[in-house]
Amino acid sequence: MTRANSQTPPKHFLTLLDLNPGAATGLITRATELKQRRQRGEHYRPLIGYTLAMVFEKSSTRTRVSFEAGMAQLGGTALFLSPKDTQLGRGEPIEDSARVLSRMVDVVMIRTFEHETLTRFADYSQVPVINGLTDRFHPCQLLADMQTYTEHRGPIQGRRVVFIGDGNNMCHSYINAARLFDFELHIACPPGFEPEPEILAAAADHCTLLDDPAAAVEDADLVVTDVWASMGQESEEDQRKALFADFSVTSALMARARSNALFMHCLPAHRGEEVSADVIDGPQSVVWDEAENRLHAQKALLEWLLLDQRSGSEPAH
Image (cartoon, one colour):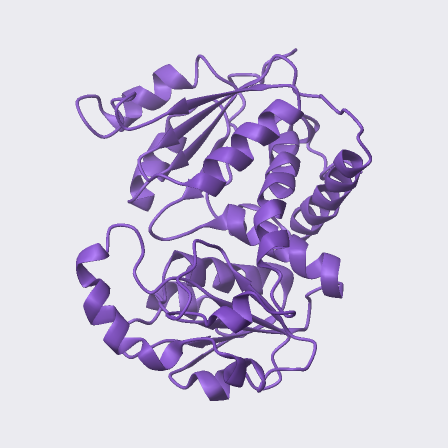
């Protein structure tokens, strides 16, 4: 194994916009190829000798399992670091944690609250840093979502996508995805829960903000939602349930979309709140494929960050 040249600044994946359209499309294609290889029972282990550090300030089932299993399947090793196991943001400055950890591992995934924690860590890291989720963005989930749509319906370019609910990290990432993959995005949020203005303004030619879910889903090819209260917002849960009551994705709402529209949710889901049981468990739902594709999309991402970028190439095919 040849470690990346410490004099060459590493490439990071902090938001979707760290990719160009060619690289993004290549990652989606590569993710499906890796998925098919695994389904055929092929063993592909290009990352023997590589180590991924997974730093969790926010817990997650899907993020931990998909990264840990993905690294193992590629032949590498993953280290799980909980808040109890690190000094990140506590006694030790983030900059010092980055300097130390990046001398010992080949890539770092961080799942945290403040996006600034991630960017500060990346500024001082000698190795690639991956955003496993922050309060502003969740780009790994969008790679899986784009892979899932492409596998079921083909390219998403030019399609109409609808995000319903809180203007949160998932909404922000869909805004970035609209720019990167060139689709039309309708966003339906209750007043006061809109996405950040500067993120929305940068994608003004791709996004339309509405406060009426029924109007938003007209002729939609894909309908997406998320929980009404994310981790860290538990104290607001009852208030949000009242304010978001008209923003539930029900079968009546889905009926206003195209007849072949898909439904996605990053999970975990609360049936009877942001989505009805008959939608998430119904024929238009692809949430289980979407969840599985976290594994494959992140394997493609790890391969690209650790191998392909060293020669400046697009994702391998």
